[in-house]
Image (tube, rainbow, N blue to C red):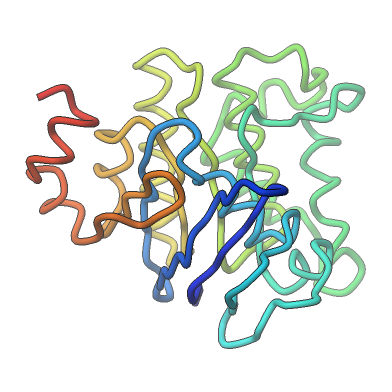
Length: 235
């Protein structure tokens, strides 16, 4: 579903990503782990078209994304739930969800089934559908950000730090729903500092440090890897 080959991104003279290569199969959930500043968010932004790589290739379902605008990538089935949620402050919960249907509205039927699916995953959003999005709690805003991404009918869902700023109980709740979403055969790339949470839902993971992929493998194997346990699990 997603293939990244030797991708390099620079911010001026600073190299944020260095020849990064990643493969994600259809229906797979893959975690991208690393500390702040490692390059995780930069990679997601490059996939979404918000950052232009200096070198390398990104392909979605076999189609090269070079030169394709971010909004067109959404129409191709790419959805990005960004770090810190980015909820539209002047819109209600329902309006935030409806905005995401712009890529297909009028071409692919009614949004009723999509809303029902999101509300089944996150019942609190249904209860608060008329409430302004900015007034929700942090956990509810994260649910809204994920629900909004799902409303675009993606084939690939990018999630940037879904547990950021959430209490442990809410993090567990969000990740339980991510596991349910992945069970619907939706391909997912999850960027996360909370290594335990990410590896609980992913089948495989990559570890990125200073713009380089330094480890990759099955989630269960990485959970027991000495380098992971020392650097990210406090063992």
